Image (cartoon, rainbow, N blue to C red; front, side, top):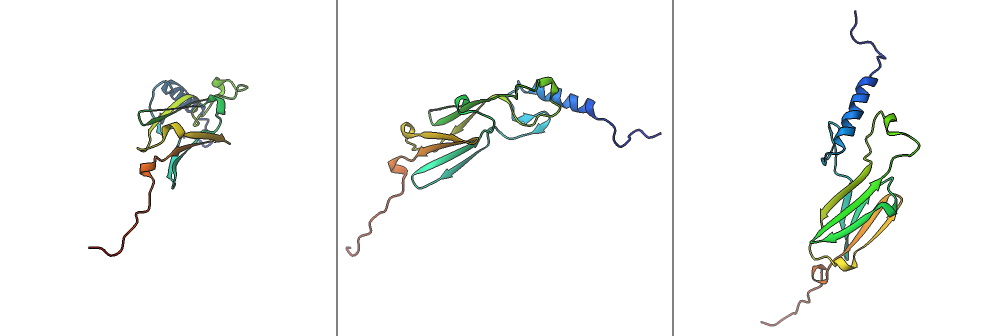
Length: 148
């Protein structure tokens, strides 16, 4: 007699996985269920001539649900992503995209003009402009010829 049959329903395991994910949401760790994940939101940091540009992917988040603060060389990004209101949470069978409130803090490069920082949000991409301080920007050093 076969113990396993093709097409056997695994709903009980999916329900268990969903319940474990739900229980672990209250724990501030970077894993989803028992699968290791990445920090949220994912970010990229670019160094340009005049500034650093930090981009963060926050799909499903509205601009009014975002908050940026900077203090002591640390940039904090806070936000909230809501569920689809028409689907009750008990109907989830798998959930890989984080929901609810989240926060990520990043140490920013030294010598940033914090009072001139700006941000823009478009199509789920948050762009944060971190202008370099004068002393950090490259400058041409004149070379004198001759002389001893």
